[in-house]
Every structure is written in C-alpha cells, then in structure tokens.
Image 1 (tube, rainbow, N blue to C red):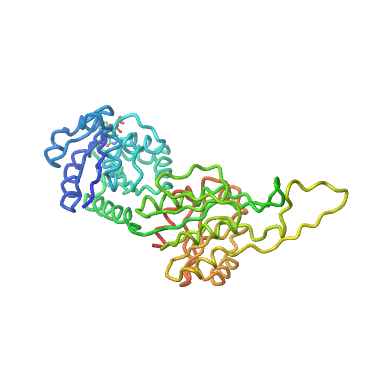
Image 2 (image 1 turned 180 degrees about the horizontal axis):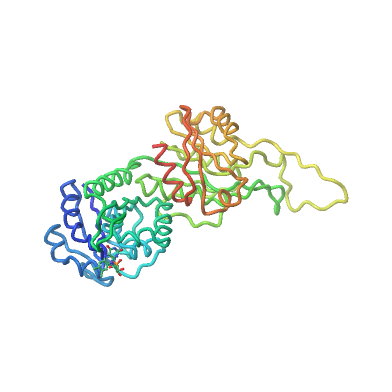
Length: 388
Ligand SMILES: Cc1cc2nc3c(=O)[nH]c(=O)nc-3n(C[C@H](O)[C@H](O)[C@H](O)COP(=O)(O)O)c2cc1C
C-alpha cells in the first residue's frame, strides 16, 4: 500500500506515536516518521527507526540521499500526512504556513490529504489561538481527529488527550482512499468569466475571478485525476500538472470543452448568456445619441456537454442572489445535469472574487447539502467528495 509520513511533535503523548506507527504499518502503510526537536526530547529517533525499519527525518537540512532535497522527496512520495500528536505550536505553524523545521517544511511541500490529532493540556486546547488555528486548518480540508476528555499528564481533567489510536488509523485510511478517489479519471473544469467583444477594445464580461474553478482543478488533481482546465481570462497562474486551455468567449469555451471528453465535468465558469450580435472592427465612436446594442444568446455550455457525453457526470454552478434554490433546481432539470452547486452572489463576504465560499449542492435525486463556509480550496474538496 501507499507510503505515508507520520509527523510527531513535542507532546507528552509522543510515546503513543510508537503504537500508531505500528498500527499504521499493520494497516498496510509504509510509514516514515518525521519528528520535531521537541518530540525527540520525549521519544528517541532511533526507536522510530527500529519500529518502522525506515530512516527518520528531524533537521531541515538533513539529506539522507546526497544531493536530493529530503523535504521534497518525502512530500512527493506520501499519500497522507498525519501529524500525531500535534502540539499547539505545530498546529499554529501548519495553519500559518511557517516552515521552520523539517516537519513543517515537508507539510508545506506536500499537497495531499492531511490528518492532525492534537494532544495538549485542556487550557491550551481551548485557547482562542489554538481554536482559530484548527478552524483555519479545517477550512482547508485538513481532518482533525479531536482529542478526548480525561485526565491529562499535567494532572488536569478536560479535553486534550490524544484520540484513540484506532480512530487515528481509521481517519488515515479514509484520507488515503480519498486521495486516490479520482485515479484513472479525466476531470474537465471550466473557470473564470468569458469576455464577449463589442469592438476591439470593449467587451461584455462579469466579476468572476476564476478562483473557485481553479480550486476545483487543484483538488481534482490532488485526488489523482487527469485534469483539463478550460479557463476564461483570469489573472491566476495555470495550476501545475493540469492541462490549462485559455479561452476568451463562450463559443471558444464550448469548442475547447468539446475537444476534451471527460468522466466528470465541473462547470464553474461564469459564462455570458449573451454576446453582441455583431463585433465592430476597430473602436466604436461616440455619437450624441442613445445606442442600442443587439445581443444574441450564447450556447449553453453545460447543457451541450451533458447532451454530448451522456455517460459523464456533469455538475453545474449557479451564482444566484439570495440563495435562489428554486431557480437553480429548475436549471438543473433543464440542463440535464447530475447536480448543481449554488452560491449566493448577493453576499460580499463569499462568492465572486472572495477567497471563501459557501455552497448548497442540489442533486438530481432530490438531495440538498450545504458545505458551510469554507475556503474555496475546502469547498472544492467538499464538492468533489459529494459528487464522486
Ligand atoms: C513536559 C512537557 C510536556 C509538553 N506537552 C505538550 C503537549 O502535550 N501538547 C503541546 O501542545 N505542547 C506540549 N508541550 C510544549 C511543547 O513541547 C512546546 O510548545 C514545543 O515548543 C513544541 O514544539 P513542536 O511543536 O515543534 O514539537 C510540552 C512541554 C513540556 C516541557
């Protein structure tokens, strides 16, 4: 089975990571342990090496294979990163992207599923800073295996004891399955706005930033899919290891999509419903009178793809003011799609150009599920989990 990295940080519960390493191996994983300096004060590195039969990492500048950057090699090879026990300090550094030791540097270079199992004194656990860091990690899709209540080493009683080893192993098994859920599948994602030229310098467009669609492309890639991203004009960089096709108009977008048949389509682009009937060459000149612009309907990309590929699962997006669920439900039926993800664009805190979103997923079999407010990366993972 897959290789995983077990990160061990400096909690009294570090000794329980020895059992965890063994149980993860019994579950079929190849386990490599990366420990912090504080963890090494509790449990020796040699013990983990003896238990796992593999070398450990601790110092950022270690190079077990000369000339190779260990943090990159370990991050690339792992299909799950589990940090157990996770101290308050390590959680803070994971939440804030600080890479000041080997474990947090591996975590920064790693892009698959992450499981953390906090263990600490109950006051440290309920500290606002710790809770805010956990909320940040959860919003990015990190699985938190909550500590349990009981007597902790410092003599207090409360929530802070490392969860049961079996529970952590179960969370790792689920994360490993999720990480390969889209292996062998092709996922087509559309993102961003379209631009419909009026003349050579003006166009009709909308406020879509493309962030939601790009987040879906990243998440699908991280779940093992071959991903094609058909993107309208955005300022976002093309995601690594994703085939990105840049287009301008709705018609270009449809043509690019039809050239890339897929098993799963996530249509997150905000496609213009209409385009000017005629594109004026050069620049339209101002006249002292009103101007009528004649518009014609653009192709319905989502409906066209679900008609062209009946075996594919097609998921549409609906940007609706005030929740607009009834309108979205009608769209889902009319376009013949498996599901529609609705986001409320009347709110300034989520949706267009924001880094956060909140989706309501309506499915053709009549279900209605809500993601809650998450980062767009978190929303993307949530959505893919729901539709695969
Ligand atoms: C005896 C002892 C026990 C500790 N236990 C914990 C603990 O259970 N959880 C925790 O978050 N910090 C604990 N700490 C504090 C951490 O070890 C300390 O914040 C350290 O800097 C964490 O480093 P790390 O996150 O890089 O491993 C403990 C410290 C000592 C001296």
